[in-house]
Length: 177
Image (cartoon, one colour):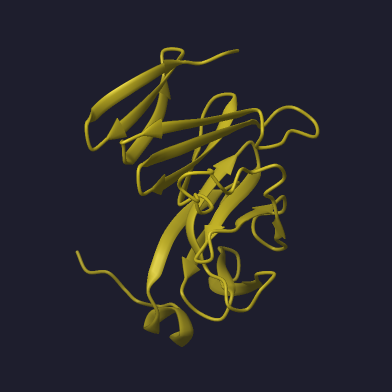
């Protein structure tokens, strides 16, 4: 089996951070000129979608109930409700600092059954922020927990609990419904 590199020159030359399938649309995030690439299966070609800032590129994406979320290289959360054609910032009430630590914006996202999670590792611990994706007007302020000393590497919901894989083992938290 051999892979074929039939992507446009710009995307074959740059680092691809992620691929995601959203409602039968293939999306590729690459480190180039604030662009996200969408694959059009009907015309068998890659289309370009500009991001709000030409210096941004998406390093992590999740799809959630028809909505795409991405974190940029500047750690800004973006949101698209039309499969990556148009993007807007989505950081309403996202805690961006912790008095003793100075937490940066999130580094990765996870979509659970009811909640979206934004995870930020900082010196001294990990922020886990959540938002109810089904609620109108939901913000990131609904659940913001700081876990001292831990560095999160993975997060997943299962059996009504949230599991956080860290540099010191697995921690669990019962999810409020």
